[in-house]
Image: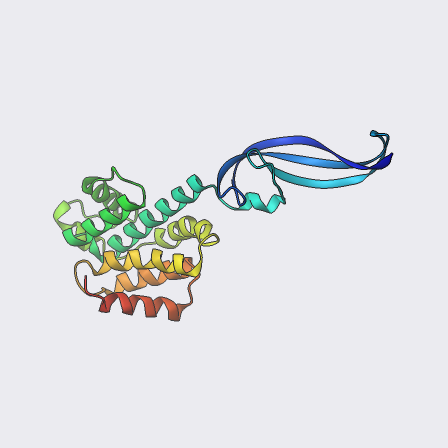
Length: 225
């Protein structure tokens, strides 16, 4: 005879990662209004029922905080950009002139999603970074000598690439990202001081405790390649 019914109104839509479906899905953002009904007829407002995100596939409703999680495609892009930035940071810190280090960086970048990245593109980016810092002498043969530090771009680029990703990575995932950089640095021999500094900056951007970063880098150095 009588009761309370929630009337939902769609305010917007988009794509999100549905925790119930376990994948990327379309969603509707809906706001609700509770109404007192008699014989199924809404009569009096009983106040708002809040705003929810409704999955277009399973129709489960979630709080707005579910939109904070990136979609699978967005997460893949964030991880790809993070690995690419770390590779450039480590090479800039000391491995730019080493073919082994460049190959290790190229493999990491390709595995992360830049499958068509070439060594020439990588060298071009390194040269552009060095020129931006005002350290490039002009001759390609002296590129390795010019790229002897990470430059002022490092902290900005690492922060922009890693900060959004870090919020969505478990500690084990953050450690794996750091170790990708360590493998690049170790491809041509022991860490150079500048490489250790760059990797320490990576660890800080990933919000890893300094002692954990040191432990992981030492363990990587003892692991046969």
